[in-house]
Image 1 (spheres, rainbow, N blue to C red):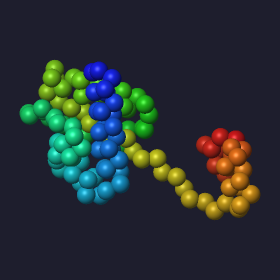
Image 2: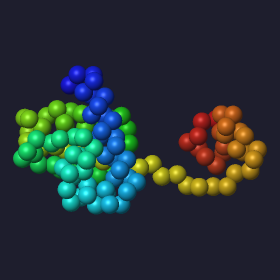
Image 3: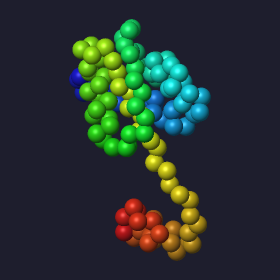
Image 4: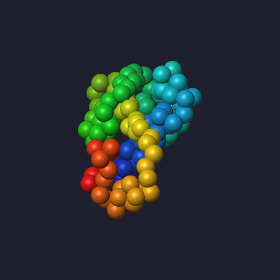
Amino acid sequence: MEEAERTTFTARYSAVVAAAWSDPGKERMLSSDPGALLAEHGISVPMGTVIEVVRDQPATSDVLESQIRAWEEIPDRGTLRLLVPHPERFEAIDLAEEELDSLVAGLGHPALPDVPR
């Protein structure tokens, strides 16, 4: 896959994942007719391709690379493993103004271990 094709595919695949995360109707469509959801976002799957939806993958760059390989292998396999990572969930907490200032300044917060200090 050339760089321009890769960029286009990545953007369209990301739009499919974002739609499934944010819209319950698109999430249902992912289950019932993933080919139609892909087509809505400009990804045409060759006729006869079996689409296997694999959900709840960790959201890492490996998922994207695996998805690109799966897309490139459709002609050989006749199947597409559509990887749908799970969205990151963050717990809402109330912070004092000083704590917000520390976060904005990049100093972190002790209650948020994943936020850099």
